[in-house]
Length: 119
Image 1 (tube, rainbow, N blue to C red):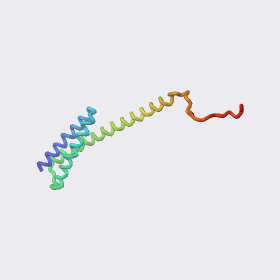
Image 2: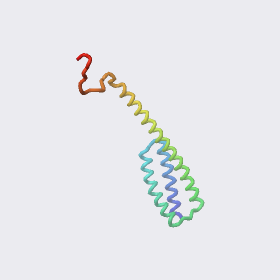
Image 3: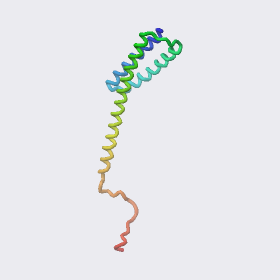
Image 4: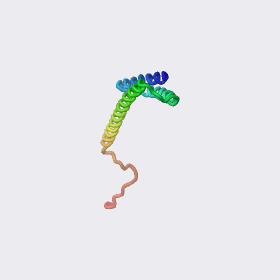
C-alpha cells in the first residue's frame, strides 16, 4: 500500500511539473517529464495488479492527478491547435507571395510558336 502511495505522490508531482512546463512553454521539459511519468505509471499499474485495493488517500491522489492531467491535456491540445493555425497562415502567406513573384515572366518556356496568319 505504501509503495502505491509513494508512486501516486511521484505521479502527482510530475503532473504538476508538466503543468508548470506547459505554462512556461518549455516543451522539451514537458516531453521529458512525460517519459518519466509513463515509467512511474507502469510501475504503479504493476503494483495495482498485485493488490487492487486502494484507501481514501490513494483515491484522493488519483483524483488530483486526473484533474491536473486533464487540464494539461487541454492546454496541450490548445497549443497544438494554435500551432496548426499559425502554420496554415504562414503557408497561405507564402503561397500569396509566390503568386505575385515574377508575374510578367512567362509560364511557358519551351517550344516554338508559329503564327499561321502571317506565313
